[in-house]
Every structure is written in C-alpha cells, then in structure tokens.
Amino acid sequence: MRKIYVFDTTLRDGEQSPGVNLNTQEKVEIALQLERLGVDRIEAGFPAASPGDLKSVSEVAEAVKNSSIIGLSRSREQDIEAAREALKKAEDPCLHLFLATSPIHRKYKLRMEKQQVLESAEAAIRYAKKYFSKIEFSPEDAARTELDFLCEVTEMAVRAGATVVNIPDTVGFMTPDEFGNIFKTLRENVLGIENIQLSAHCHDDLGMATANALAAIRNGADQIEGTINGIGERAGNTSIEEVAMALETRKEFYEATTSLKLNEIYRTSRLVSKLTGMAVPGNKAIVGSNAFAHESGIHQDGMLKEKTTYEIMSPETIGLKESKLVLGKLSGRHAFSEKLVDMGYDDLNEEQIKEAFKKFKNLADKKKNVSDEDIRAMLVEKLVSTPEFFTLERIDLSYGNQSIPKATIRIKTKEDAIAEETQEGNGSVDAIYNAIDKATQEDVTLEDYAIKSVTHGKDALGEVHVVLKQGDIAVTGRGVSTDILDASARAYIDAVNRIIDKKNSDHVNKRGNITLI
Ligand code: KIV
Ligand code: ZN
Image 1 (cartoon, protein in one colour):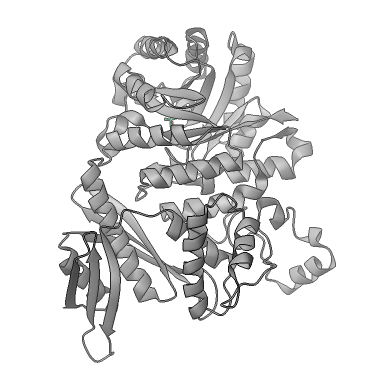
Image 2: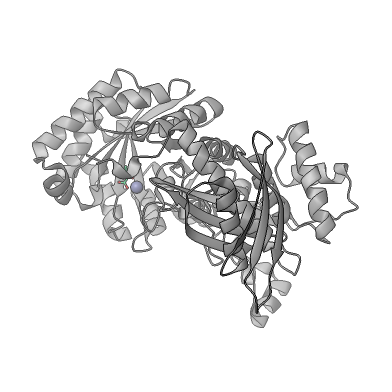
C-alpha cells in the first residue's frame, strides 16, 4: 500500500470560511485533536497576516509534537521572516510558499510576465531554504495554468530546493480526468520529480474536490490537502474524512492508504463544527448525522438481515459508538469518568473532570438521560472557554402573545461588579439582547443567529450560534443549554467576551485586507 500524506488546512484555508474566526486557544485545541487523528502535516495559519495569526501558529507549534507544523507565506522575505518567528518552537517545521502562475492571475492580479513569476518564486524558495529544510511550494491557480509552464515552474521549484510541490485547483474548476492528467504530465515530464512529493489541493466549487483529490492520488500525488468537514474558502476544500474513508473502503482499487486513526474522525468533525460554528449537514458523507441512518422499510429490513446490504462502511470505523452506558442523575463520578475515557477524552486532568462532572450533574437534573452528544457539547463548552469579562447570573422574562416581551438580565463583570438591566424587545430573544447591550455597554450588531437541537426529544440540549460585529471585528459566540433563551443569552455574552478579548489583545485579523501577491 502506498502511503498518502495528509496535510490538514482546517486552521488556515478552513478558517477562511466566511464568518469563522477561531481564537488561539481554539486553534490549539483543534490542532491537538488533529494530532490525535494522526494528520501528518498541520497548516496552522498565515503568520504574516496579523500578529494574532503569528501568535496562534506559534502556540500550535509549541503544543503539537507528532505532526509537522506549517506556516503559509507569500513569496516575499517579510512573510518568510514572520513564518520563521512563528515556527521557532516547532519540532518539525515546514514553510508553505505560494505564488500564482495562471494567465488570469499573472495578468490581472500580479501584473507579471512568466519570467518574473519564475524569478520571484525561485528567489523566495532560495531565501527560505537558508532557514527551512522543508519547503512546500504552491503555484496558486495551478489548475488553470498552461501545462508546459506548470512543468517549468515545478522544475524550477525542485531545483531551488522545494521538498513538496502542491498543485492547487484554487477555484474548483477541474474535472477528475483533467486534474489527474496534470499529475501524470508532471510525473512524466519534470526533471527531478522523483526527489520531491507532489500534493493536491482542491476546492469544491463544482462539488468535485474529493473526486479530484482521488484522481490526483491515482495519477501520482503523494499528499492530499484538505479540511475537516470540507470547510474553507467559498464552497470549501476537499474533506479529509471523505478521502481517508474512500481509500479505506476501496483499498483494492486505490492501493493507497493514510496513517489516520479513522476512529478519531467523528470526534474531530464535531469539535471543528462546534468551534467554528459551522453545522455539519445531515446528509454530509461520512460525518453527517444521517450518514449511517436507514429510513426506508426495505432498507431497515435488509440491515436487520445483513448490514452489508445497505452499509459499505461501519459507523464504528469512524468512532461512532452506540452508547452502552446510559448516564442520568444517579450516575456517579466513576461512571462519568469511564464514559469520558470511552468517548476518547482520556487526557483530561482532575480539575477538568471535576468541572465537567459538576456541569453533567446540573444537566442530569434537567434531563432524564444524558447522551454522548450532550456530553460532547458540554465538554467543548467547558474546556475551550473565552476569557469571561461578563458572566450571566440570571434572566427573568415576561412574555405573552398579547404583550411586549420584557427581559431583566443580571450580569457579573470580571471585577465582580453586578449590572442589572431591564429592556423590551420585539421578541424574547430581542428583549434579552437589548438588556445585555445595556448591561455590557458594548455597541455591537447581531449579524447572524442560528439555533439547533443537539439531541432529540423535549429535553434536548439547544445550541445557539451568533455572529456579532463591532467595527472591523466579527466573532462567533455559542451557548448550550436545555433552555433556548438561556442558550441565546449565553451565546451573545460569549461573543461579547470574544470581541473584548480581541480588542484587548489587538489581534484584529486583517487577512481580509491583505492583497495576496
Ligand atoms: O487554494 C489555493 O490556491 C490555496 C493556496 C494558498 C495553496 O489555498
Ligand atoms: Zn485553498
């Protein structure tokens, strides 16, 4: 079996999903889970984009020991220097340089001739080679680049010292046949190609990112790049879990495999979904909630007789276990700790288990049975927290369908001061948000509000995601509770805390204003 390297860019291309804004602590949490999943390479961010990005890459580099950590960089010295600084503490650092090569990008974005592109990229690789033994070079928009020029660029990159050449289908324009042919052509025509690894980086604009990545593998790619749940710029990137499971399920066909611990897929997917606020569609391949659900009578009958009639993969392979231990309010700390280990949370310290158990007991008081999903939601909420400038103490609400909703909110500040405000609104949530605005005195705009049920039934946990804006800063906030109004208030306060945190640490992400040359 040929090994296919997995390069995860959830923290870089994935974070470029509109509305997604992860803080450093969340990035480290995701990176540690990616390491547990067995990802070979983690692209932690774009250090030159902002001081906040540099700090996040640096903290990820310090925390992760078993995956190579990568920083993205334009082909210019100041970006390379920022990446050098950010990757100082990495066990196995790698620089990812890029420069666009397609006629459209050369003419309109770079205003460069082919020769200038070649020279700029070569100068950047040679400069970077003084500091990095591992360099990946990406000819951005490679898929729309003239094939003979792409061969020339790749040969230059090999000569200059790149260790990986990545072929991005930046705008998701390729069909699998065309994309596969690029890899075949490079393998057959580029001098020294056997000395480097070839990588595929696909976008999903036409829904072909996974098929294109697999076509690249069939035609000689050594590495695939992608994100968890396929998140990313516009329609997203290749879903890593889809490629890994396609290779696993169709191994006789592809004769290739990854080093991923497949049973960590589900947990990774849910962590990324929670922290990014991007819900996984029910029908999403591999990790959607319906991916292993059978509705039709004929299918259910077939499943009961023999699972392989309608299932080509088993849910256990991706770490989806049937709950064996049902937890409720009479369960003790021992059963709860066992459950955490069973669910893969085997690295929590005593303090974290104590905190989680307290939260579990509160939840069990309100809910008859606490499911795995409830615990997962609760843990993400508890273990990845934002600095709490404001905490919710109490909500009182008056609502009637013939009267104006009124909310009284009591909030505690970091300095233990209490702010209590009463406000009306054109709905209960609106009244709550008006009261929070008054109490926190933060001038914010609600850009988005989404609510979903974490589990089923009347006593299900409700999860609310909000997007708040203040000036240049846009953040997501989340709140989980058995009551959706309580969850709504918590999500809003979480977002206000994130805005204050961002203002304090002055790491407004300026990526949006950067011209990528
Ligand atoms: O899609 C793309 O071209 C990229 C590059 C920076 C590799 O993300
Ligand atoms: Zn990309």
